[in-house]
Amino acid sequence: FRREGRLTATPNMVLPTSAHAALEKGADYFSVESRRVEVGSDWRANVDAMSRAIDENTILIVGSAPQYPQGVVDPVEAIAALAQQHNINCHVDACMGGVTLPYLEKLGEPIPLWDFRVPGVTSISVDLHKYGYTSKGAGVLLHRNKQLRNDQTFVTDNWLGGMYGSSGILGTKSGGPIASAWAVMRFLGENGYLDATRSSRASTQRLAAHIDAHPDLVLRAQPDSTLLSFGTVDEKRHDVFALADLLIARGWYMDRQGPPASIHLTVNAVHASRVDEFLADLDECVAGLNGQSGEMGSYASTE
Image 1 (cartoon, rainbow, N blue to C red):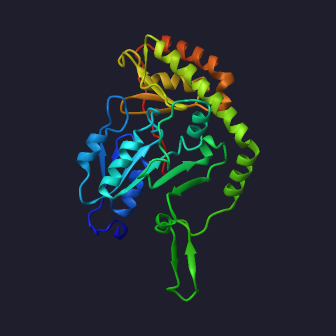
Image 2 (cartoon, helix red, strand yellow):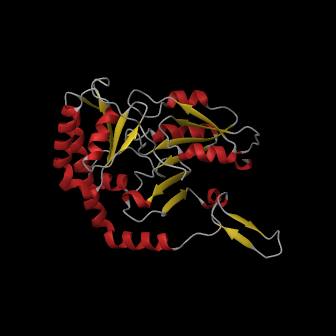
Image 3 (cartoon, one colour):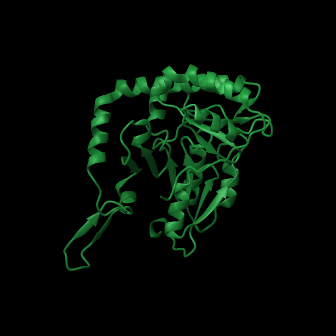
């Protein structure tokens, strides 16, 4: 952490409880204390609370665009201003929104600034295999400048095999996913991504409006992009995980998450023709609940 002008044996990072679990993995790898801060009532990062959690050992603060659980964009401008104030790094997790948000902005949606147009943002992550519609294994980590990127790369000649260099933690990686991602992005192009974003956003808004109007369901937040989550008004009568079980039994796939107990939907361009069918099944499954209970399950696996 010499670049920030200090050394610390006990580094910490400050991030909202909505920030992705992968950041916990990074903190565990590098012995960085994770200081999770409760979000506000709108599920967005609480900047005042984050400010209070920062101290002389804080090396990173994090915002999301959007955050995964409720699909809202954090106040990145305010978070990055904190980073500038304390001379620390600010990472924006745009894995879900890095492709979608720029096209939503081009389509006229009121998207708050979240990228390198914001002073103080030092890095951004984007998963191309999500809304870039590429195969898995293709993601990018963007740094604001080459000096920051230098911390990611590694070079040594301290062995008998000559000069060795790598661009990240992986020493060797396949070029297949990279070539595949390049091909898909070239194929879709500007117009393809505009159309895909327009379609997925329209489907998201239809789903959100229906759920928000349903007397037995509660929309966790109005979605800022193409992610949404919802629960039930009466959790004892309508267990949301039991509802997920009924929907899954009809062939639908979704995430079960919490807290709070919720169903999470990732809506993309292929769903436009299936929204009516899903909503009909959703209404029938809610009506069919009668005290059953379900389990949350897990987001991922170690297998």
